[in-house]
Length: 140
Image 1 (spheres, rainbow, N blue to C red):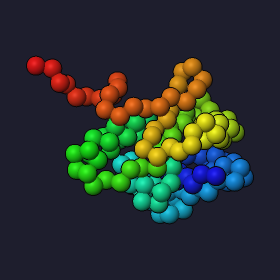
Image 2 (cartoon, rainbow, N blue to C red):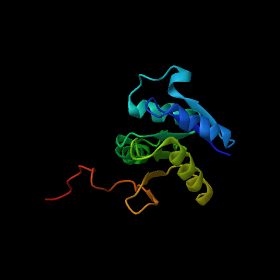
Image 3 (cartoon, rainbow, N blue to C red):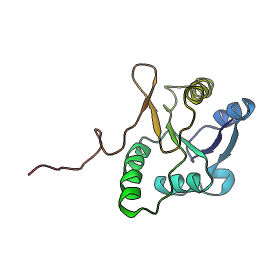
Image 4 (cartoon, rainbow, N blue to C red):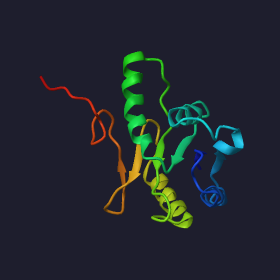
């Protein structure tokens, strides 16, 4: 079973569903961190060795930056995984629980990885250091 940390914007029914499925879930609200910025939410999840589950697309960028910072500074611990789920009304809580459980069944570990729901109805791994929201310009 997996250990999750939910950031401030995830629906309670998802937490309840994952707990019912046997997973350990804590929320930013329960730990008093609901007001933290997204990068700090990831830091809390990392320190607690929990997978961060969120609706926030910004976590894709933070995942990429985390890898670059880790490589440059050598001092950041590897995060324990990020799952960016589609927000309601795209997904209802029951579908979110079902699809997260499917992802967990496909992966031995999510450490250092980030997944988002792809348009083809499957989870897509977010690569580090490249992508459509990566603003680096290495041209001449």
